[in-house]
Image (cartoon, rainbow, N blue to C red; front, side, top):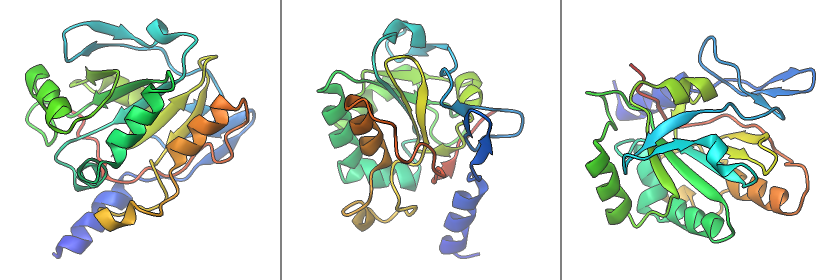
Length: 213
């Protein structure tokens, strides 16, 4: 089977359609998981690469971005090797946004890292997350219905999930597609900063499937 077909299969396996429901939108999720855009973001506690316990409640009153990642995924590499993800992290955190990078790859699977390796990746890639959270059991990822890497979420100051989906509108692993892409996360953050509704609150995430246990 060709690499193109494998890549396409990887992409399609993790996508789903948004479903309209009364009071909001349901993000595409694994079976049994429901995350409602427009509703309070699910509370969670996880462990950072530093060993510190981190809870979403720690950032009450702040805008929060959740970024699911897998450093070996070609779709993730696209955004890091071009500096696109780092630029967005720096832009967001420079404006007071909390950025939590989450790794839900289980032990023995692609993208799984030790705390030390996670910190090394942050340093070598010159990334600027507020913290890197390790979720090897997949509890947080499945709570949010994260299907792909990267899979992005934006939570406003009131603790409401206002965006869930892809980082941009170019669902490829080609580095050249970063330039000129519509960045949904940036647009969502700009809307939140302006106290405006997010125009595109949910999109299909693309990338490698999250490597849950």
